[in-house]
Length: 78
Image (cartoon, rainbow, N blue to C red; front, side, top):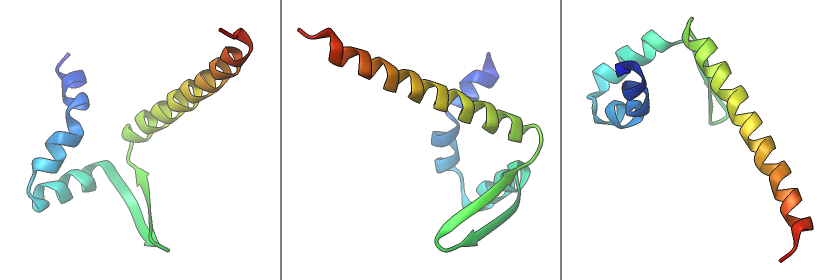
């Protein structure tokens, strides 16, 4: 239960930290980061890579579901 609460507040908590602590957290989560053409590329360390992949899959499925439901609404009429 605490883990879920922490995950839900992670962005807000991260933003409130001092730069030194942010760097420590990012070093813990990420490896092989690079910056090219104004874009950052990062590789998550295990097990965070699995969490990121699962989240991305869920987001794609939700977007597809929303797109499909939008098509149906056109045909329903008022």
